[in-house]
Length: 202
Image (cartoon, rainbow, N blue to C red):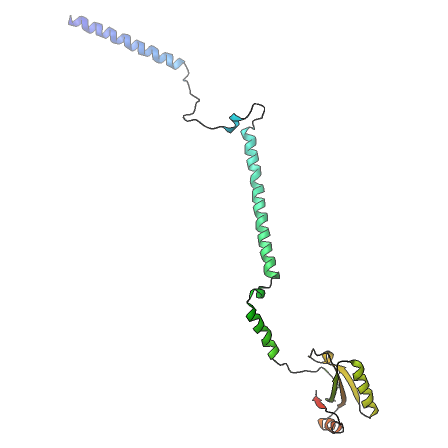
């Protein structure tokens, strides 16, 4: 009885092994099923488009994106160029001293006026370096008439426009006698005058 049970068990085991082998062969013959469904739901905005609209292929979309990149860079460089150019223009053409408070501007204007610059003449009469300065006139015709009067009285007289022969900006005509070679000679002629005069040594 024991022997029979073992034989029966062996036969049952062999049948099961055969069944398992048959199942494996059938599975190898059939290609495995691959599921295309994603593990989670995805949103596709193009799926919501109407059927009339053309769906742009992914390659064309990539081309558009790659085309947009250089234009963005160009626009950024253009803006940067404008900023740098504008900064340079302001730096070279804008007076930053205008931003200072008014008090400092007033003090700057007062200081130069307080300084008295000595009057320097550019007259050149060669060796004769002394003149007798007479009156000053704002009108040239008055200066000419005084020169003519002094010449008729026997003096060597003439006149000059002060800004053209000196560093002064005063718009006047000065009448003078001379020139004389020595200061003593100029003084002798000045003593003969009734009007006030001044000896100028060049």
